[in-house]
Each structure stands twice: as structure tokens, then as C-alpha cells.
Length: 207
Image 1 (cartoon, helix red, strand yellow):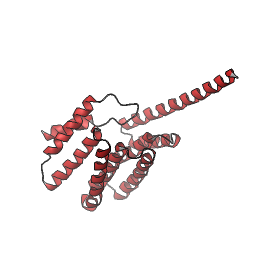
Image 2 (tube, rainbow, N blue to C red):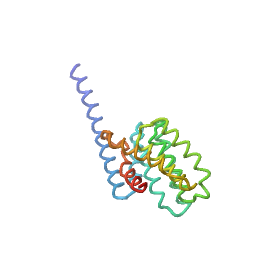
Image 3 (cartoon, rainbow, N blue to C red):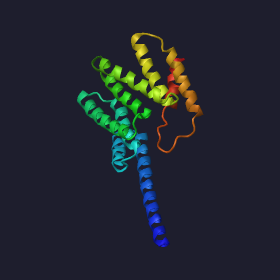
Image 4 (cartoon, helix red, strand yellow):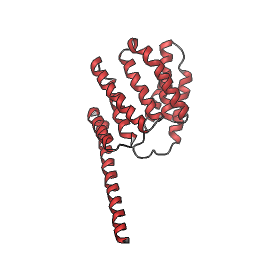
């Protein structure tokens, strides 16, 4: 009987290890595609991984996030809307799996910013209030998350430039984010870790 139980446990462990191995291989391949600017392929692979990893928010998050980033280069409004609609669904899927996740909230704000970037006159009033709410909520949930601090500061800088006011207070926020980046340990596998290089570039512009 003990031998049967042992064999069952070993079988379960092997299956789990194989599943983890496939997940890690798939995620690494998707990140490689992203790094080489094959954004559509990267997003599609993240999405396929999400369908297999039904309880994991990360693949859906990255699938949507990559689509949002690449949408800033789109010049056709119908194509932009189609891509951002898909990104919105993927980010919503991620948020369902991980409610009140600040990483997803700031990705949703960036989604709105893509519309504003395309046509500020048409989308600015609609999306600006939504973004303020998303950034404030993310900061309330995770006041020491450097990506949240950085993303909100960059959004506030854009608003300040639009209204002709000083960006200096928000430069201090970027500096705070950079200090937190420097103190943070290495993130767990595939957890969001972007932002430090962006913070350095923004601070250079502040000077």
C-alpha cells in the first residue's frame, strides 16, 4: 500500500514539474519575442499561456500590457480601437484573477493613455478622470511600489505640462521611485520589474 501511495505522489510531482517547466519555457520564449520587438507574437504567446494557466494572472497581464505598449505606434483609429479592446479584455481577465492588483491598475491607466496619445482632444476629457482614479487607487493599495509611484508621477507631469505648471514636485516622486528600485531585492520569476531605466531617463529630463 505504501508503495502505491509513493508512486501516486511521485506521479503527481512529476506532472507538476513538467507543467511548471512548460510554463517557464513558454514565458521565457514570450519575453524573448518581446525583447526582439516581435510584440504581436509575444502577446499571442502570453495569451496562449494564459489559457493553460487559468489561475495565474501574469500571462493575461503581459498579453494585454504588450498590446497596450505597441498601440502607441498605431496611426489608424479603427486598428487602435481593435487592439486596445483586446488589451482591455486581457487586463480585465488578469484583474479577475488578482483583484486590486496595482500592477494591473497602472497598465489599465496606460491603456487609457494610448487613446489620449492618439487624439487628446477626443479622448482627453473622457480618459483623464479615469486615469486619476486608477493611479490614486493603485497608490493607496501599494504606496511603496516604485512602478506605481513612477507611473503616477509621469502622468502628473503630463498634466502639469498641459496646464503650464511646474513638474518639479513630480520629479521628486520619480527620485523616490528610483531610490526604492535601488533597495528592492530581485523580483520573483516573471513578476513585473520594469521601471528603473525609465525613472533614470525621466530624472535626466527633470535636470
